[in-house]
Image 1 (cartoon, one colour):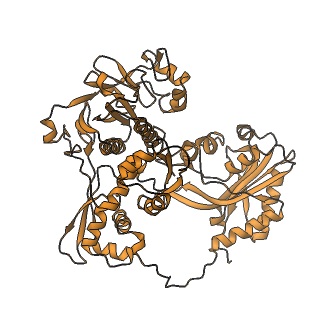
Image 2 (tube, one colour):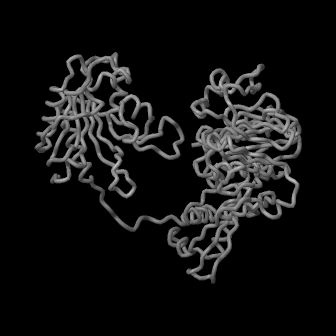
Image 3 (spheres, one colour):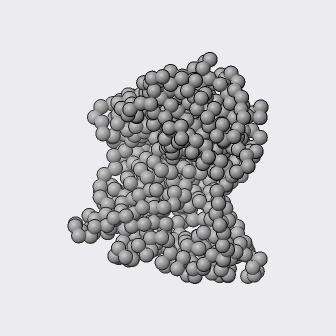
Length: 590
């Protein structure tokens, strides 16, 4: 979960009240937050920080001092702030322009997006912030917000990255384009010499950290002003000139680039609303595209692109277990910063139409609206009730069958292991030497280390063996757990199965050992099976076999291929296999 540090003085100023620790612990649940650490015995309010843990990954607007203070302030006062600079987008299918009529009448600074950047990092949003001289506390908070949004919400800058610049030195319009990484050069932050984009990826600390995002692309994105001065190399690093924001600056240009337009637009709105709350005047920037986007070819940012969502008041009362009137629901939503209106008469058949705040895009279902009603009313206003139903839990059939299998393997001298169901491409695919299309990939992973759903328990077992070389041999380990298999016949094309995996590692480990242990397991489970010659790249050819039960393939076993052992750093021979317990238990009488 995201953790942030807020400057004590800045936070209480934005909150509109000064609190002690007891008061903070009482009001923080409104923002799904917890007080992590706050030492008031040292320093002054101007220098002290309050450490806060946020428990909602769907609310990136809370990951800043201003955002957290805004939510708590609105809940206390019921006063919803107005952000008049947020421009409604005219969404017309096939429209050439997404600029509102009001915005067209204003002379706006512009960013021109060239066709060359479309294939690598196609979307950009931005705005100008003018206000008081930036203090050290505000600058630190801006940098923290920039990092939290880009790292957590932007998937380590893959889908969203943020650049902050001194606007006074920029020659408008700004140009966003694709360039040759081997010939384009500038002086990046924390450097003193010009470096090509390719050199930045290979030598600069930030380039090395985020090189994987762009290193395989032929064209790289670059942001320059009309005088050809480099602002930044998104999403890697700002220039040392225009990209070096300092304490005392009072006019900023903030841009957001990325691969997902809703995320880019929302991030820009969050940053703009935060700066507005801090006393900055927000000026719109028009982004002009040479190609079509979902919001048009010309969009003014910050923009309001959120869709309204409707919920039945009867559904609110039913889910919360308490009669909630339309007026109560509307008042609760106002205390959450939402604008909502009643649709129809004030009866149980009434509906509520909610327009999300410009800094929120987490209302995916009517239940999300109901959750806000709950928080807006306050958990303390719901009387606790004892459960009315009495139920007795018992093991499912597959769990009971799995326990029998576990006992058999323990009896054979194996030790049980437990692993994560999510892992990396490196462990699940590259090291195992299998086709990537066999493994389910998560669409929006938070980390490369947890990017795939495993399709076998063997990578986990081999991973354990790779760090067990100093333990006395033989090593025999097993696991029973879930795997995800691609099955086109399933509703979503994926089936979750209960698998058993086992691994034996020592100098004499071979096919015969794996076969004998499998035979013992099947005997004690009361299952008759047969084997068939197998062709599995994870095992040595000619020393592996498929397991058949009722003429259906339910697993494989054999000697682990030397290339797989080498990839995991296992120095000893190993044998093992995997078994689909769901298929094996179908006709079992437990």
